[in-house]
Length: 320
Image 1 (cartoon, rainbow, N blue to C red):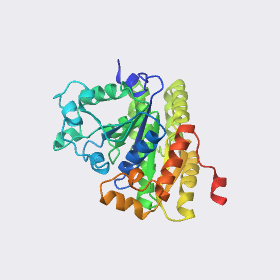
Image 2: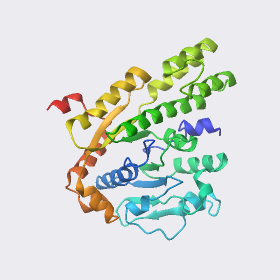
Image 3: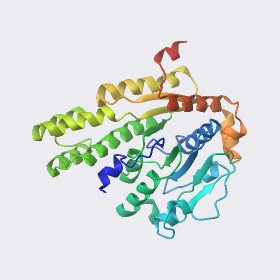
């Protein structure tokens, strides 16, 4: 089986979805949202597994208040255990399992290609209704590849310029990486590689510019890339909102991605700034367990509902 087949998700099991939570910048609440979205799903009777795919700085277990004493993902990647099932941990939360991330081994942050593809294959074969990947910060190929195997790619953003900029960069890097995975012609791959540099000499600044260049080489491949853009629909969650302007950020990002990238991102919800969050974090306890009726917990439940129902926020919501 080729890596392209794997990254296109051809091993998708029946009635199973992979959700990947990323965002480019550290500190946007990826781990917080991954853990609490998982608990929200279990409250609905869903069978869920959380995987700490932040190979360089794994701390999902800490956010859940779980002490990990057995084998972790690093043991699987290093070949100390043969099956990913051997590092699976049943938590005390009904319907929730955990695979804790790599610990204490710096080289695990950048696994070899063969190790990464083995991990992806075994993740795709896990027997759970929902597999949630908590990704690391940045736009390395490993992070992008984990994001691209997901059925639902979720991006967390704070209403801050640096966070917004990093999410746009993550989106752009993701679909360029996606393009390279479906293209075989070395000449076109070279064009895509050049396009990933914003200051490239070809004058490519947007996906539309890239496709125009590709169509000059092979019109059919250009059409394939257009289909890839159409099928790439990441979800946006705005975290730590304090005002209506913060809530509106999701709508403006959706509009900008459509206008400049040709990508239809979906705004699935927001989480309000709430003291309950830092109190739960300080106690190493999940918000959904410690403060289930807080405004933030209610926001997470709404997001879970929208993701399950394949719905998103309407702009009318803002003017109500």
